[in-house]
Every structure is written in C-alpha cells, then in structure tokens.
Amino acid sequence: GMNSFNHYAYGAIGDWMYRMIAGIDTYDDGVGYKHIKIKPTIGGSLKYASASLQTYYGKVSSGWKLEGDKVILDIEIPSNTIASVYIPASSKESVTENGNTLSADSKIITAENGYVGLQLGSGRYHFEAKKMYKNVPYIDETIEDYKVPNNTDIWPQIEADLKFAYDNLPE
Image (cartoon, rainbow, N blue to C red; front, side):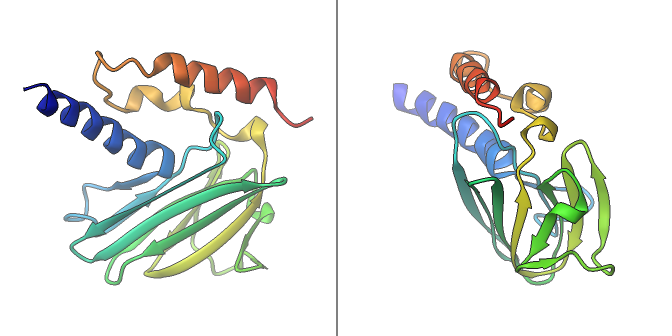
C-alpha cells in the first residue's frame, strides 16, 4: 500500500542527499564505482554531513563539517579505484591535507567556481580549507542537476536554508 510509495520517496531523497549533500557519485567511464566523484555541497543550515556507500571495491565515504572558519572534509577511497574529489575552497593555497599544504605533485584537476578538484587514489584523506561562503556554490545553482520527485515538497526547506545561509554570511 502506501509504504511502497514512502519507500520510493525516501529512496529518491536518500539518493539526492548522497549525491548532493555528501557529494558521492560515480562517473560513467568506470563500472560501478571504479571512478568515484566526491563533490559535497556546503550550505543552508547544515553544519555537517556524512555518508558512506558499500561498493564492489569496498567502502567509499565522504564527511564534512564546518568548524570556525574552516570546512573539514574526511574521505575514504576504496582500493583499485580513483576518485575526483572537489574540496569547497577558494584556492589551492587555502587547502591542507593532514595539516600540510597541497604539494606540487598533487594532481590538481581544477581550481574554480569555489572548488579545488584533486585526482586521488585509494586511501583515507583529511582535508581542511578556509571557508569562503561567497565562493561556495549553493544548492540553488546546482539543484536542476538532481532528479527529485515533483510531489516531494522539500523546496520550502531548501529555500529557508538558503535564506538563512545568505543572511548569516561571514563579513
């Protein structure tokens, strides 16, 4: 009866949250999660989010939290995979990995639109970046990419979160 409908709606929202908020997704050029994409969306009233996914290759996880003027991103990439990881940051200089600035041999794929993108192999990574609200894309710019069922009324909450975030931008 109704439960199956609820399950569908929750499943769609769950999928949307995995891909949008925690930012875990996969590229079509690799079977399953062979080429992983991690691109979290920071904003609204959330102060932290994390998700993990069991894949054929092992566990992939992405967790972020806001702490003071920093965003902290902890990720785990399973063996035999590669990941394109997008860290919400204004520049590569503002990013550290395990306390060290990004080295020259870091495979930086992009540094634009409020993200620094890195190509990473398997392992656990701990990134910190200075929080730059003005440069971090908010949900309203990217929402069209995600299929959320039309009958699911989450828009008022998202709009409220965005307004809250905008009203509380750091100077």
